[in-house]
Length: 321
Image (cartoon, rainbow, N blue to C red; front, side, top):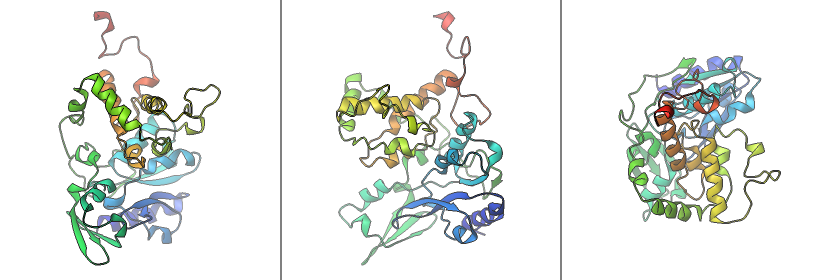
């Protein structure tokens, strides 16, 4: 029995006990998946996971607080669920988690780049997925792309391909993509002089259109109805269309996610301008891990370091300064 069939079976088994099961289906075109809210067996027949199960379903869980729901979760999704539980933003007894091993997800921007000069990505009529490739069908040809060439960057540094927390686990667990430092790629950027890093962010932020897609896609950014970016009393950030205000918003956003970001990458994926906003969050996550020995979403029972207070942190020996 395939993993897809096993997941459908697990979803149908829990369906009578919950108001809905959150997963994925085919999206607006052949290259994109989309969230799916399953309430009947007919809905389950539209379930589609695998390489196109990109969206993080943890985003929707706070909206269902107070009712019993189920969610299908890969590794990074389960970390977001774990962090929501750690912050008591959702209730464990209200959620049935169907976990599975993830083999990576697609990065559509990489597909577009791989097809550049050959054919338009928007002309794809169908996609067939194998273990190693995706076969793209066009009106007059078929093009094969290696999954490793069009896989999201987060997948190549993933330490948790399997759901860390689950009530039902489907499939055989996989080994992590890496075993070394998941932040090794940050070293080159952070080694640049401050002036070069500032210039980099000013250039990137000049393309920002202030759509807040990055905020809206983040499963841990739960205060969007009272966001500092849109508050007028008090007014923290103006609506001026300048690089300074755009960068200020991103710094606020990243700071609010310090010690909370699970690296799911939804903020960067949702950005219509292709700005690498995840870089800011990962930089702060690295600092949080170094200072507090805490990795967001890994332990749902742990207290996030910025939600508590101790006289002296084990890794910050102030009295020795």
